[in-house]
Image 1 (cartoon, rainbow, N blue to C red):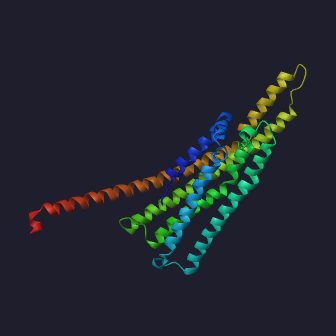
Image 2 (image 1 turned 90 degrees about the vertical axis):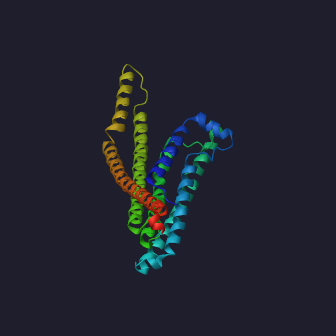
Image 3 (image 1 turned 45 degrees about the horizontal axis):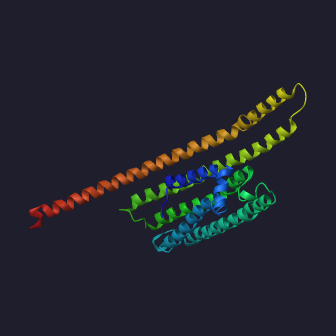
Length: 291
């Protein structure tokens, strides 16, 4: 099992697109009418994908660790790595349990008390939607660090399965960097989600403070309030937007360089295959060598 950054990013973008569609009530009505209102919410396929990465990575770490006789690391360091992976697995389970028991269950119970939401009882409010991206950050980090750990064990035990050890090491370390790059990318997504939550609270307070007044100045006051909301959304969080932009650029640079490493390996392997095939064909066709 080797998922690279492109696989993770494609899956993540697909989940975000589905999350965006489910913001509209007509899509929520469609999936609720099919009896799949809970199962087709965007967080379920995302958490299922993360769980598959965690389980497969943990299984691969166990398999690689069984070959640790080939590794010259101290025994205590090997056992510490295995212990950390077990803790990561427990942290993933606990975080997932809290998401369903604290956020999703309570939101569902609140929706059942609202007659207008019973038809789409599993639809999440906007703030809860953003909050899920924040609280899922530890789960993504656990999944990606365990995926990176399996790459490290492959390098340490020399059990990669490529032509030779140097190529295996370069490829696995590229996968290692890409796994952590995706974790960092999701971290910036969580920061963006947290900023949106803070922005919504500030905007709500501003709307309450500038409730529609009566009199000649009503229209001008509403215009000023709208301008202040725009100022809060853009300038008020300018430092956050800059932090996210720089972080995304840094992740992109990391992925580009690791992708170039993998392409060089692929080209080198294709060249080896071609040379080896040509040598076999020459050996079979040469009468001198056959005699």
